[in-house]
Image 1 (cartoon, one colour):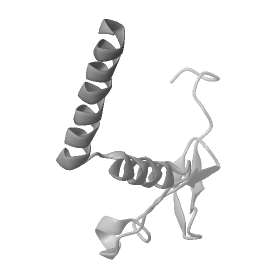
Image 2 (cartoon, one colour):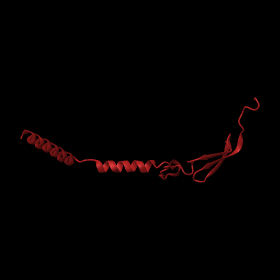
Image 3 (cartoon, helix red, strand yellow):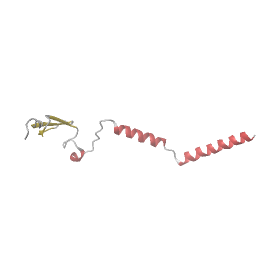
Length: 97
């Protein structure tokens, strides 16, 4: 091997999870911070856990709630269309007079 071109290897590198669990492994970095590990990942724990670091879930639920409130029923659409046709008819009648 050529000397001086390879990164330093740490045989006792620490993997530190956001949940607090620490693993020891070999790496070219002395400490590696991770967000999810086998101790806290939903696949391994069997529990549903929403890991939302950027408020994405809250934003999504807010958007879907706003859309569900804004959805018009067919009766609302029919009433709006009837009002629009009545307004057009009144406008034509006023212009013809």
